[in-house]
Length: 365
Image (cartoon, rainbow, N blue to C red; front, side, top):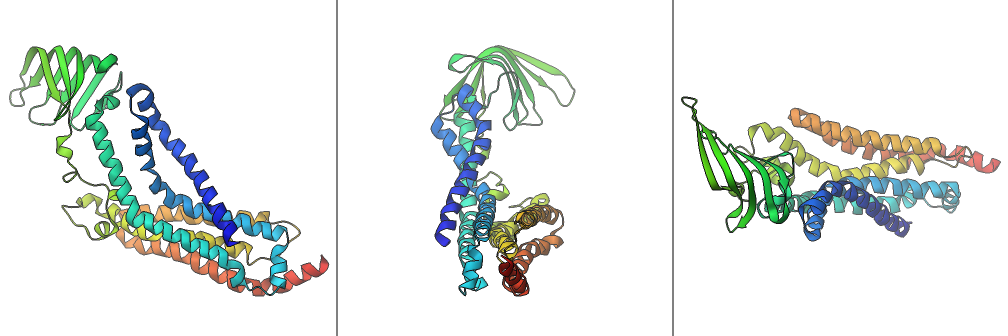
């Protein structure tokens, strides 16, 4: 049973992971088709997002593997034979619990170590794309925000030629400028990408008296590199930070308005891997503690699925509430441990109540 569940666990997890990867990669496909992003960069960019989904996929995959395995044992009456051979509830539940512990260990590795590393690499790669592949970000007929620069390009021609360009530079709030040009080009330099404007004008409004000055030019260069976003100075998001930093960080390392959300994220990193044990306990409580019924297992299966969905939904709700009110953090831990305690208790104590019923049904059969 242990070997069977491990093999099924791997295949189900990979299947769900492929589905999610395909759904997430669709938003990057246009960059390959129309903007020249290489396949290797595309694969690297999308693969770095997968660890954040694995922490959700693994417990759910484990739940359905356990439900399928034990439901098949019940339908084939193998569970009755095992009990008749003298196997205890612990012996029956042991393979599932071992897989649950392995899944929990894998989830802890992801949430504590690999998730912040992979997401930090994703943000750095995204930063690199913005600086080295800025043509990817310039969409025809739409305004593109590049952190203080708003760029509009009517058409992108061959060799990064730009037609109908409008650039609004608000990086200096006291001296905002607007530049328009009939055509130009996107160039890559050692300092980063630049837009070279040809045959246009530069408009600037004096903030003191409201007068506008216009400068006509034949050639003008605009630096669009994100030099202010160096990796050491960039404000890191919650998923880029370690659990220790999320739970102990203080301003100015963490903005005051982000304190609640970051604390909730840190606690969720410690709690979410326990969903593997919680979901396994729910499945075992509903199936292993039950006896064979000639009316089928549909009701029990629906009960198990409903309990799992409710547990997952409550986990998300508790995290959002704890981000706004830190006093609700204990509810996040309660939501993780209550299904485990109740599920394991019912798994090992429930059959004692149902043993006589199971014997009666076996005698009728």
